Amino acid sequence: MARTNQESFIYSFVARGTVVLAEYTEFTGNFPAIAAQCLQRLPSSNDKFTYNCDHHTFNFLVEDGYAYCVVAKEAMSKQISIAFLERMKADFKQRYGGGKAGTAMAKSLNKEFGPVMKEHMKYIIEHAEEIEKLLKVKAQVSEVKSIMLGNIDKVM
Image (cartoon, rainbow, N blue to C red):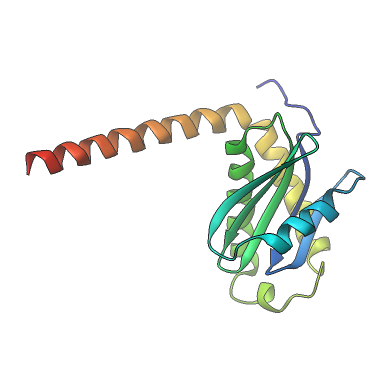
């Protein structure tokens, strides 16, 4: 795959409520401050949210009291950003779920989980094309499934 611009993902964090437990960036800027403001305003319901600001998207995945965030260049597709968040969430839950995550202090997981976020960013960027193809196939399967279920309902 042709490598996407290295700056596609700018900043990411994992938070419990409004407390950022781990964050990662290689860039300077006001991304952490803007993301923190967005975090303060997020609904607590499990969902996905995207905010646009200054040619960047602030993408959030909220689940079970935790918020996963990635700031990306506007050109990066929302699906790829969400794929990153899903991957980061799964890894975070596997490593810290049911224990350390519930009691960790602000930014106390930076040293451990920061490099992990960096690796996930790199992986998603390097495999963006394949991920987008997979997401399209999943969407098509889902569409076919709903059509089939609708047809079964009609027959019954």
